[in-house]
Length: 421
Image (cartoon, rainbow, N blue to C red; front, side):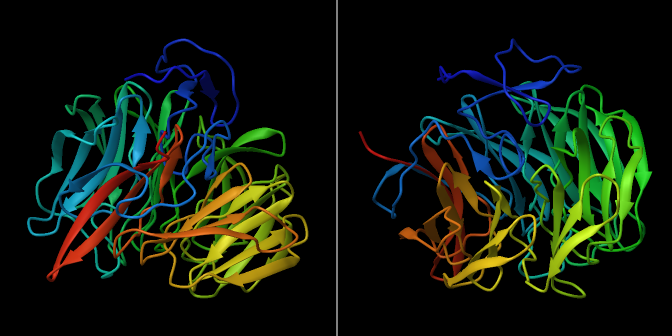
């Protein structure tokens, strides 16, 4: 099943028809795909040319469901005929990548990337909290294993093509930084107490094209390439910094204080600012100008530690870890509204047109309007007993990873949700 949609040309952001991808060219992604962490634009925004379901349950609007071995908090990656997930067997501490048929949910293959050695300390973390990235020819995954972070590339049929050790890794809570793809590179980071690294690797070979040292602080944010202040910038928050690098060379474009030490969120931009949020050692949400001036335009004490933000039409939308949805003006930080959803949030919200989908840790998904005037709820659905992974929404379907607790046993499931004809 190949989806007959027009093709998206990404430098990470932008669109145009294109041919088959080459490693040294921009990556082509169909509008029906969700190729990496936070979707095709890297900002949690899904294509508007689709109609995902508004409600669901264990029996309503379920196209298929399938059991997932082990545990993981990484999002589903959807590309062409396949859905990819990272998973960790917590009995053997082994880490794997799994591939499922997009049409039926049938598991096609499972590749053990590391046998034993998975690392985590926080009970809420997992040994597979990163999201797989796919460039159409290869898939990429980061794992913290045996006191190091390693990036692996696999073929679309599950063969390991190369593995590159990024750095030593001193475990603090866990590891959650997903790979970012940009032109010929896969960009990876590993912030930790021993001294972190951000690096650009050749997608074909795994060779290190550039490498930059990071401060000796724990941090969990994923790098993202966005266009801001008129140029492409590799953005990374945390370690008490907001950092902007040239994504092809690793050269520092600008770097400024404006973050707290530990961040989990991937930043978004309104074209003028980038946004940093974190929860340790202080709660903060800050807007930093992306022009290299170092100016912090505004800051609040909101705790948006784990879920990433959405930007839409001059406004920031977010879900606070403690179960609130909120909207701020992006240029001034003025709070326009807050509304109680309930529960605790780890997954990031996803926007489809004027709808925002936000899933809490109990498996409740709240759909509300991207409306700066007021909080407008549209629907609430419940699926599973636990949900830590951000859903992927593409091709008119929602791909979501949840867990059921059955007689004390935890079983993960991958659901494909769609409106019935």
